[in-house]
Length: 60
Image (tube, rainbow, N blue to C red; front, side):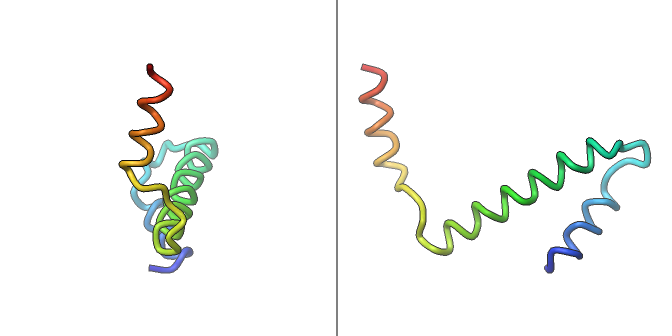
């Protein structure tokens, strides 16, 4: 789905009383999800095991 189509779908799903602030927030969330998906596709992620190991070091 293209970006324009994703925005149109989002707008159709929001209630009629949605404010511009509501729309901006949902667009922000869509943008962040897309960035995360692209990071995964490009291998720009940290394996879960590495994160858990580092987190465990912080908590001890």
